Image 1 (cartoon, rainbow, N blue to C red):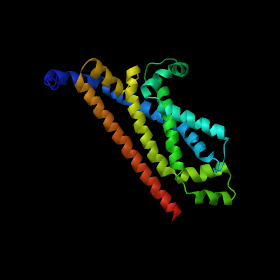
Image 2 (cartoon, rainbow, N blue to C red):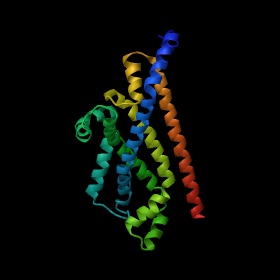
Image 3 (tube, rainbow, N blue to C red):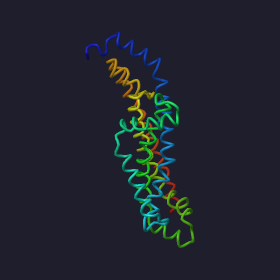
Image 4 (cartoon, helix red, strand yellow):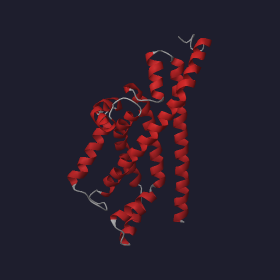
Length: 237
């Protein structure tokens, strides 16, 4: 197998496939990852906020049964393996998108798998806000909504960005697995050529590109978090 991996014929065939399919696959992977991350943050961030402010000693206590229900739902969704979850949400995917196969269809299970993870990350970030800062805002007459929007979220921006970076790289990994059910992108290429057709050179190329994308997202997220942290320190001084 490895003797033929870098033969002239194999290299020529691999290059043809790379030229024909990889540019579109990269775009599909980035498109799905960014869109799924955006929707996950849109759902997960408010949930993370509720988990913090809705506690008994929080600034906006929620009924105990409601808070417990939210925690149970989040924990249940996080405990289901992604491959199984993709199959379980087929009816919802068909309802939302009209099909269970394809690049756009993979966004639905990605969001459902990722938003509980994002909620926990947001909860962790918001818990890092100093209670003294919140108490100061309360003493100045700020409402719970004002404290959330003007104190808690701005104070935790660097941590939120760092955790968003973790989320986007996790979703990128999930998007590769969605190739099993017909999702597009680099994952589909790796599975179709590497697993079904034994063209390992194509699979290796797809994996390398996925690693590069992870490094790009990680580097951008780290730089943004560092900049936000510096601005926050300047404001505090």
